[in-house]
Image 1 (cartoon, rainbow, N blue to C red):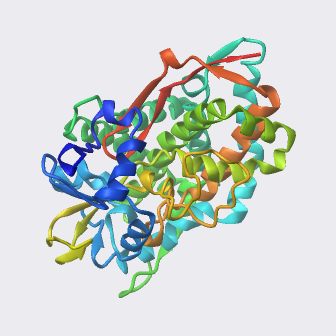
Image 2 (image 1 turned 180 degrees about the vertical axis):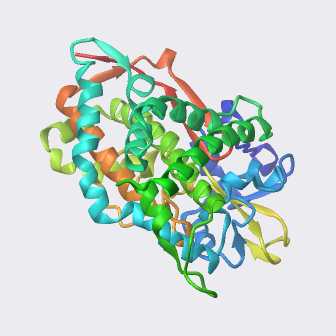
Length: 400
């Protein structure tokens, strides 16, 4: 077959039921792929995506890091954050926001996360089965980040609903108007919290961010403006919600498909941290990251013009045989020196330490209660958040 029949569309649900065969062909036959319909270029090889992620001067995320966000035009105030900045401005704001994820703060969260996981899973013991995503994975991340930020109990469900709705995309929905409207409603909630913390500081992450000083490349140290604070807190409230829920789905599905690997984790729980990395390599929640090309570049013998949009298909890099031998097999004992599922470079995911903590505890507590399960594949549902995130919204499992 020639390249005429090679087509990848990041919005196509039929393709993304199992995109790996297409990504395999893209890596081998079209390492620089061109999609005329949606007007973007794409890279799928591990080395190419790594190099582009590190070269922020050539491949910028200042207009957003999602294809449809870039196409939608000016970025709303509540979406302006470290994701839509490049160094050196991004560096100062990233350094401030990183205080949310210090090793000490993350370690202190372990008892909270474990208690929440146990509370949800204990209700399912003896039930014979439940939806591993809808009844478990989707509930956890919003609770954790709400506690970190100090969002009141009375508002937590609504904040989680708005965060989820702001990310959700219907099949075929390419515009951002509805998502922006929901995001603005969430931003108004956050504005209230910011005003409250300005008047009455508390012992929570939101107060820490408002009281911290920003050290910009030029000018005096200063505190965040209200708009900057809303952007930061909006990012924290939204970013980890969907990706962790999708990790839970991929973990449940992948370990069901490889029961011998799951049995290893039951027998040897010390393998769980490595299994988290292997699942992230094998089926990562993050699908792709978008960049705007700042100068004409030549990639794989083709010219990509200044102003073009380049997609870094991070989800395809985990199966690149140049980096990972036998990549289509889940191996919980695989030694992984690096994967790109959290990104890399200036825009590497700040929440990765928290995500790893949550993922480890999820697997430990799940396997302690349910050493085996079967998936009701006919009633599963895979959904997208546009071109950025892919995973299960429904994963019904039968337990013993």
